[in-house]
Image 1: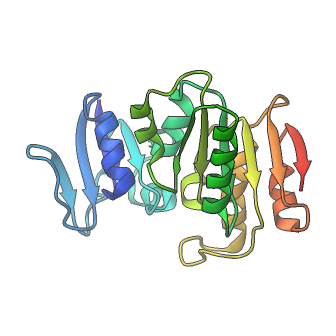
Image 2: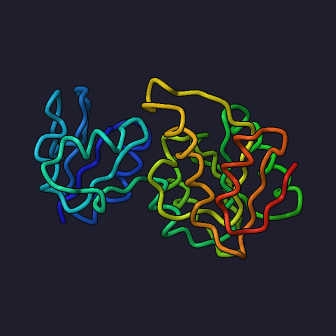
Image 3: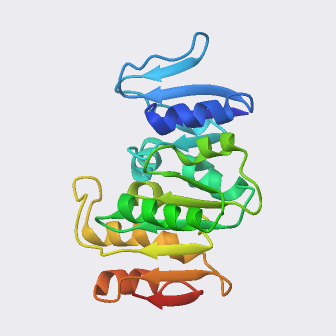
Length: 225
């Protein structure tokens, strides 16, 4: 299997470590990054050239899905995944809490992790804070453990699975240098709730209409605060 890892920052490194034994890896980055000896690269302005030749395309958060699609001469949407998306698919526990919002994600995620730890549970904290999600697998996650993920709009925009518990803090306009318009930013946050079912839980900040609207897409038990 031919695998492209697009963007070789913190999550890109994590993705490489996870997929390096699963296929033929090519690191694609607009910057002149340093990779392990023998690893193929596609560097510079043409880092997305002929991207459709890959069987799997692993997007880092800084890379817009729209840029990958625009660069391809074929529809490669179904080939694109990410560090976060893969983690949600393979995580050994279903006890996953995803936290999003405009401000306070890191603080809230840390507090949730501390609270669950105080109950004597084993908790793994990562995502946009600390370790990339796939790196948490190195902590030998057990089915009874809990995972708390801080998740940005960049990480959420193309996920295909929602966590068991999704939390939406206050949401206001931000990152419009990355998102083409405000609704694209809101829709990315919505992905955290979109794939929940009736057994899941959606928690949201009730005094913010954006947060309420985002959480309303969940089919789960809705808890305002």
